[in-house]
Image (cartoon, rainbow, N blue to C red):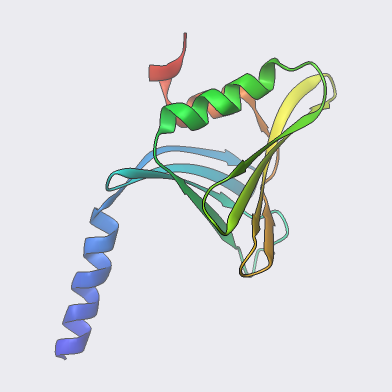
Length: 139
């Protein structure tokens, strides 16, 4: 009984320490911006997962303003391109910008070098990324 109570308290405390700042939905796929204590995280549903086993991937960063600037600057380029970031010793993040039906879109791709895993989000529009980060960054 003690173990169950300790587990419940632990699970509740981990939920309380994270705060969802933004959320966007693209069909069955999502992108969330979370604040975890003094860091931030982007969590996205992997497009390669199935409805019966939906996989979410996360990467962490220190300043949401930095990630927001990187994402928004990518929309300024008129050609398809990638922005590549290394977020620690084991993770590489790629923001893949493509123009589809005349609209610029971004997809997040993540490689974990230690686990040898790969994840990918669906494509998101510029206004969806702005919504995710909130109105505080609009210029």
